[in-house]
Image (spheres, rainbow, N blue to C red):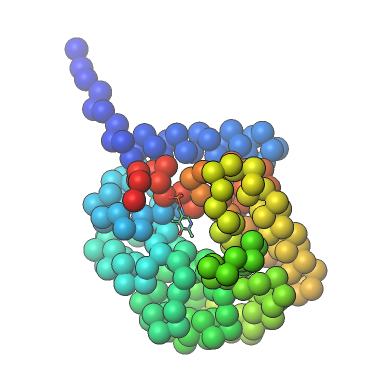
Length: 232
Ligand SMILES: *Cc1c(COP(=O)(O)O)cnc(C)c1O
């Protein structure tokens, strides 16, 4: 007789999320390989990030500059793909630029300049758009994101990849749908106006409570925290 070692709770959660991503992709005629799961580990200890990595998770999202710097150092042996997903102040770009693969929350030309200056190698980035127009949220508005995009295109150390948003929170995921759809339209608009050699393709949208709706609306990156690591 032999015993299977029980799967860790985090490994089990990740597997469940991957299954849900796969179902949502299939239901909307998409390939699950075109959707990247970012495990949002803010406030959670590095040991849990390591546990998720052992379970096969490779991309992690952090919201606070110094916390990202510290975790990246502590977990440097793993080769994690770090995404910065929080509001970033210019003077903290120095903590993020050396370790982030993707900065998802560029929302001004000044922040783009700071990241460009601090980059040790090219950094991918997304422009964060405040689709809901909420005063309490960061992000550029629809009126000037094209200008921010043009600015980023001229910076040697930043590679623009697409757009990111956090819609107004509502328990009902259907309430997020129009905002996700809006972000997809804005990505199309950006491609029409800027005519890049290769179209900008990334849409980072969807969290624990609404990532399936986001996938139906074209998300290529979903950011899931609570459903993997538990309540914060
Ligand atoms: C915290 C956070 C998430 C994850 O939210 P959950 O509801 O815990 O899945 C995703 N994106 C951003 C920008 C966040 O700040």
